[in-house]
Length: 155
Image (cartoon, rainbow, N blue to C red; front, top):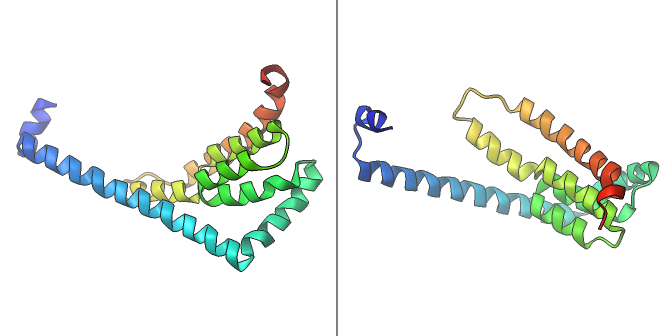
């Protein structure tokens, strides 16, 4: 690290200043994206689009035998992880179902987190598609594991 710093040519103070500025820029981007997607979900809710999306999802939930009350949590979690987890936790249904949907929300991460990742990947040669696919799979595996293991690990 010392050799790399010497080759870089910046003083330790300048390196510290640059790293703090970079961290603050990143915090602003992350916070801005969280606020942006919170506003998007609020707009979708007020215009009735979120309810229409939830209604379509309720049909799918009914087919799989999942509680219909959790459709809102999935819609919120699709966009922003904290809103989805909060909605899953406050739904009026069995804890097992709340845990399954919360596991999906946390595994998926929300489009807000995906946008944060894309903003970081834009400065690299890494591709976003593998992350997208793995997050989708992670979400479905998480739901399956909650239902499979609930009997052994239930409170």
